[in-house]
Image (cartoon, rainbow, N blue to C red; front, side):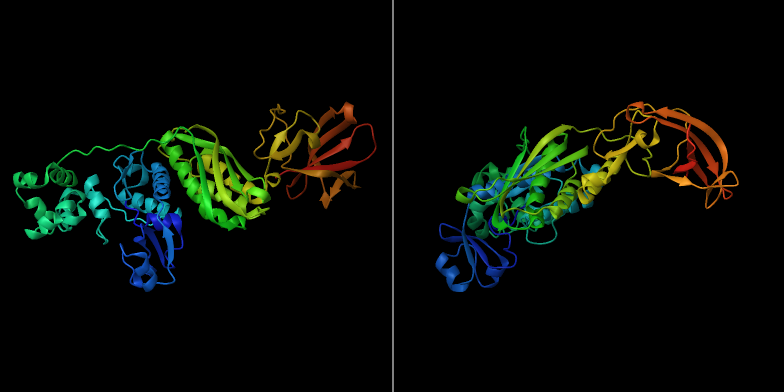
Length: 475
């Protein structure tokens, strides 16, 4: 995976639509397509760039910024494989042989990695090959034939590459051109003993590793023990929804770190930094409390987008920080042969979290029984993320599906309660005596039924001549 425009991606995200040139020692190190169309070439001096493209944005090369960007991308890609290594020329090597079945094969994994890089704002040339050296060479090739799943296909693709694509052969390009050796295939066809005398062992080892005839050893990236991400914005952001791009980069890094550490996050805290100095303001915090631990970037991004939609910024934002405030060990994947058709409990919990972010915590509720015999007290509603108190339920007691907020007094016709039609009692009474400390309730409850079969929950106050009251309706 070759980050073809790492300097431009880190310093000017709009390089795709405007002329931008990154300079190192007053020479062009990276050129955007618009500047290249105006005639600017790599290695051109500042004066030449200004003459050919006066409107070009000139930026100084920042090696540390580019290195930090490579580290951030590698951390985000850990969610696809634990074996990620940094290579030369802004290239990352991923060993995905153990991840193919998990992500549904090479093509699906390829598309997911592409989507991740595009989402965090990096242009890359991605190649797939049986060897890391072969994949590295294909990624440097400016064409679409960068996938080879078999060694025979890889050998044909590599044979057609120019010798200068092989880093170990670059110091000897003049000599190779002089003997008519222009491609990697012709270089490989030279006598090995003579080639080793001329170039040393480095060229032969690079060829053997690329063609799968020599072992390859890498220093795999190790995820840090804790995660705390930070991004300084290039411009002041005044609208919360415009922060999605920046926070997505942090979320992808977080999910890569979680995958590498086999963890799931329970609580995430975002801090939106404002002005410093004389007009300094405290940071704006956004806390995402998850009912079910998660490690999926799409779910976290969806929740945060709902929060940002309702957020009004008190001041422009100049930086974004992310802290994994609470994590726990990731649960093992379910081993059921036939999963539930309605989705897993984690899917249901993710839906509830999205509803809470969109509608507000107070508008998504769950029942919480109370140890009280009075129906209007026995059930109350609490926010869905609040753990309900345990209360014993009355065994074999019939209760209506819908309990009215206030009982409705019913008229009596022909010695029978009347609710649109005459009702006749089919069960009861069930006597309830409770609440002496807050007004004693003495009631006899009955189940009544209409001629159409609809059932109602009625009661009479014992010791009082107040008639019938409708308190609930059965489904």
